Image (cartoon, rainbow, N blue to C red; front, side, top):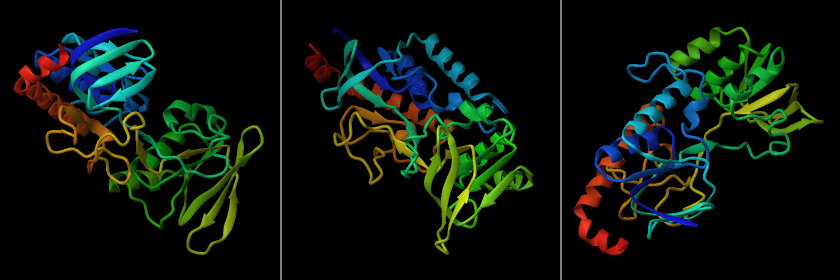
Length: 314
């Protein structure tokens, strides 16, 4: 196993990680960015973004490609598609199948993933009618009927996207009103292909080889009903990607990493940025901002602790 040493190692190549890589490299410290997939993170799957300042309307993949190109300008060392075996945050050692990385600082930018419904049939039909990415799989449902679960921006926006392919899109929400922004709601209510199923939760996903039905329960009346659909897209929240370091640092009740305003975690020299940390807003712009802040303070940490860090790495 090859051993590599860097001043700063960034775990995760989404907008937060790539932003951190840019600012870290510009701070004249050796920087590596590691990801278990290709770089770009979740935004790479977004058809388009309309709220990133200066970009007006831009494809998610295109924007993330620009982030990565920007990081390349400053000579960031990139390690995509790594199979991580262990992460020791206290000693700042990361082991993958190919390398053993050591660093003076670590910036966690591993993001989050869609929360599962946790119902019977969800796991069994994942990839066979259950999907968590409308942009990835929407075209498979051309002229079919699908359901989206959730009431926030992501759920409603993805439901509207699916109407480009599906003949009918149901939006299943456990409340009697949406949580999405008003402008998003207004667009959705005008879309004739959308139908809202209020006060309902999914109890089971059914089918044979592919999904053909979801069992619903009305949370107010307790009534059980069936909804015949060819696919279901849950958008009920997100879960932080912290499996490699759960229990090593302070986290909230949902597993999100707690930081201060400099993105410093409960471990000296370890920072967390983007969706993986406890934050009131999870958007590309806030992730990029977190990355910048975290990287600047990671560089300051190295500068302020140069002598002691050099002794540790000798």
